[in-house]
Length: 411
Image (tube, rainbow, N blue to C red; front, side, top):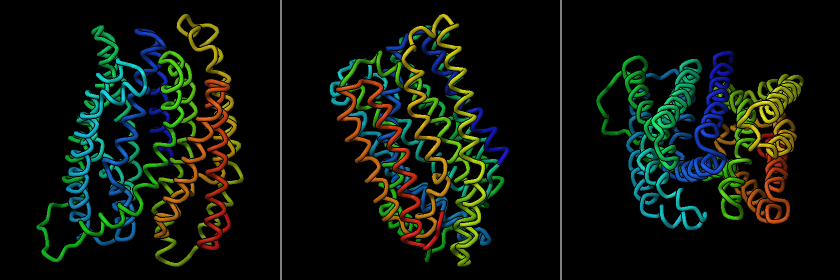
């Protein structure tokens, strides 16, 4: 748990410094361009991996004692993931101009061209990281996850230091994923998984494909949900306005990763509980977390809001982000309430109910899109913040409701 907290701290610090770096060397407009490109990248990356990473997580957590199966579970997933991601990389490359026209920003197209090949490496990394998670290599997972964002920050720093055009900033995403792919493949296939021959009766490819097709929309929509506000703002407002909003949204999303961090630790345990038919242990996990975790989230939110206030009012580049503080506070309200149940959002996948995982995701993203579509034209970035906050609350309500309905588990 402490390793994951440290990883998240590095992730958050790298994200904050990256945004400040872009503001310092460029301006809020290029911060908006970078975050819109990143939003499109996240959107396409979810389809690129096709839910295969979720199948890997589930299968490895179920067969954690059977090392003979590790190689084929992971390799079959990598084959599928590479095929899916290569296809999506070509699609993004082809439609880059159309997307930039839709968002009314020519600067975005260059960034989209740079991130297209990054989808392939992102897909591979997603599968390998979930393999570590499924095998309960939590410390290693934390280290490699943090390494991704350290790479991004240093690559952004190099681009800024070389005074390259601001449109080149998203290239840092592709290069960082490439470096991480090399490191992950080297580590997993030398330290954890022994390379074995491929048995003729292996059917892991079909298993991954079946589970992935059932579950990927759920995972994809959840990830895409975190970028809906940025996409809608890019459509309705200017790049500079998106930059102001995305600075706050990035911080709030970073804090919202703490429940996800808890989930990564709980997922293998929940899978074990389902395999042993001991759902009461899941309820015990929930009762312990509800006692202290939301309060922890509240104090973290207060500290970060205070730091943003100081940055905006006492640092030279902070004047561009005056409106970010209220946006941050509005989103934090939803994040804190959501933290009661979000650590258990993986219960539907581990409980072999991927269809309901997808259903919840569809409800959430539909509400998010509708809220942003209605509120942004009227209230601008504050409308997006209100819609995003309400979505966080809705997610928690749905997790609680369906856990009781499907598994008779009271979270």
